[in-house]
Image 1 (cartoon, rainbow, N blue to C red):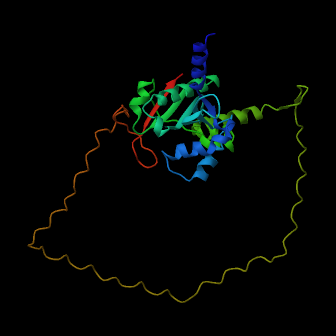
Image 2: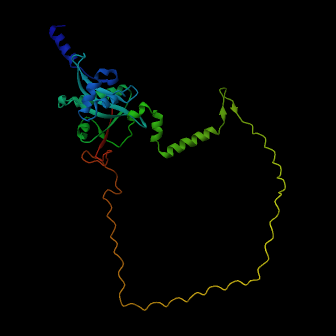
Image 3: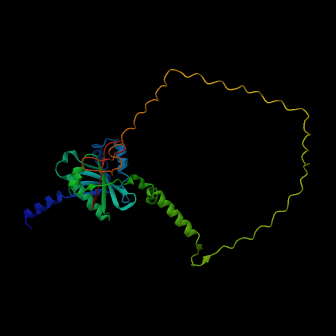
Amino acid sequence: MTAGDVKEKLHSDSEKIRVVPIHRRPDLLVPCADLVNSEWQRSQAARVHSLQKSCAEFPVCLVLLQGRSTETERLLGHVRLSRVVGHGGSLFVESVVVSEAERGKGYGRTLMEETERYAKSRGFKRLCLTTHDKQRFYAHIGYVLSTPVQNAGAMTAFVPMETLLRFSRMPSEEAQKQTRTETEGHKGNRDSGGACVVETPAPPAPPAPPPPPSSIPPPAPPPPPSSIPPPPPPSIPPPAPPPPPSSIPPSPPPSIPPPPPLPQSAGQPVVQTLTETPYRDAKRVPIFWMHKDI
């Protein structure tokens, strides 16, 4: 190997770009918190606390690094991945950010490509995301418009995935599952040997003895009818005669305004394009839903 080959190899090693889970590099927690806060302002302590939730079981925060050694490597970007409730083969992408000093150099595409490579290595088949104004960039790298999904986020750190899946089921599915459970329960319990255990019904209880005769005396007979005649009914005066017809014409009935016209989108399917979206985020800001099969 010539000196030129050695120099080229050392240069390629120093320029190596990769993503690393932040929980494997706790020394990068503070720099990564500052990077994310440069785009979405938050206290450094709160951001570090959020990054510390990264784990192998999701959510996981990935950092894009360049360089081999800690002395020469640079922090280029960050992305967060979490599970999608009800879709075992999907991950939700969020908090995508590239260092402001490194923007315009193609690192955004590199960050997404490395994220896809990481997701595929973990066995996932689809990435989902939302964006307010970068829909054309994501469309350029293969993402298509999609429908909303439920992001598990940090809840998986303390709520089992089965519980989240139960919350995401339709009521009809939950009722069917409850019916199947009750049906299986009526088939009888089986022990470890496979024998069916049949419970013997208990003998009926003997009838209760009749109650003792009551010592309460019978009610007294009603009093004899009174000889005083009832009072006469009150006299009702005859109704007053109707008033003479008035020469004033009756007032016309109040006018009722016509109902407002129905919106033009009523009865039409929800349509999402790269320029318009019917979806809104929690702040009522238009948001685009997209996904990519990897």
